[in-house]
Image (cartoon, rainbow, N blue to C red):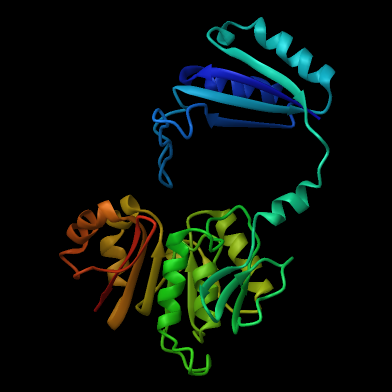
Length: 301
């Protein structure tokens, strides 16, 4: 394979990427050319919202081609286009053949939630000390346990099932995982004794991912769209992001049973006041955990 590397301004990223794909690129990736410098820019969008920009001020675009001839032909055609103005050719080089599956797998090791609770990809053996295990491979849906927000939620779940007690004792009650992604929180609840669990998401891919992950972990979940959530729950989990969590405040709180718990994540520490204010009419949120600038906020009804 051969990699064609280009530099382009922000307003050319979409046109250039689309053209490369139309010219039979095997893959196209875009990176901030100023990453790891003082000029680096954060560029992301929350679920359901478009990203604030199509690219960075200086975007490095890389395209993989099956042969050098295809890469050269694509470059020749690109250079003749008006949108290639202000773009720069960084180079073309051969990419050594690799076992990409093995390379990808090597990047994902078992993740410790507590000394006895681990997330383990299927290609790894569980650590000797692991008593509770979630088998989960990286996929399309968010939630593999590598992000602080997911780990904090799972730690919170584990704290509601003391390690010294049998997982058959259920301290979580009826559980709602709202915005389930990969289903990891719902599966974590099941692994800690919960037996009545609803996992809901607006994304059909997330719903399918949750179904498959539940089957792989041999747990029973009821999975569906958000309207499938009904009644009240002893435990309501939502690992999304601050903006949707604020908008969902009335709905999420309406699902918390008397004496039940609400656990929210996907929140930056700097956003704590926003969430506290949004939920003030319903409950008093408190910061229960913090990791790498992210926080977990909880409340009891």
